[in-house]
Length: 179
Image 1 (cartoon, rainbow, N blue to C red):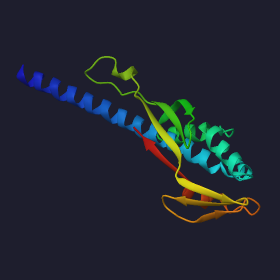
Image 2: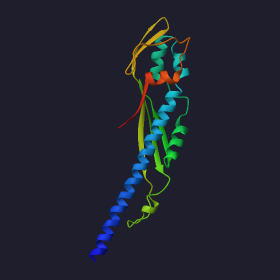
Image 3: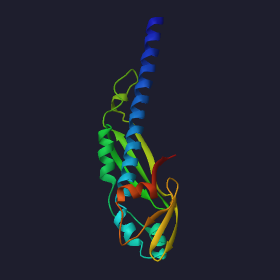
Image 4: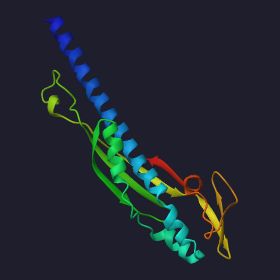
């Protein structure tokens, strides 16, 4: 009788571990999906940002009101799937100098069968939020903008002669997880 009780306890601990591993996998997928959406959106900011550099007022308005016309959520779905989950939601929240995207995922595989009834039909869910954060101060003089950023100072942008966006985007905008 005691051996049976110990076996049940061992299997119950295994079930808890199995559920925890599934939940951790879901969290990893949510983190990857949120970061993918934010990084993809940042990569597409170049043309609208250069268009906004027509005046200091236009640029400030861009920082306040820009809404991502490019849909980065399919990229988030691909990353969630690559991590064994399905994207259930991808929602943007806009703010001055800091925009947030939250990805919600559900694992493609259930927790699995165990001594705890019903686990073979339970799926793990998780969510994660990433931000795109403008990390610079700026000055404009005759349509030449100078940016001092966290990682680099003295970045000069002439809107009539745009620089390659891939490198510039990482200096101007940080992407990271929050919460």
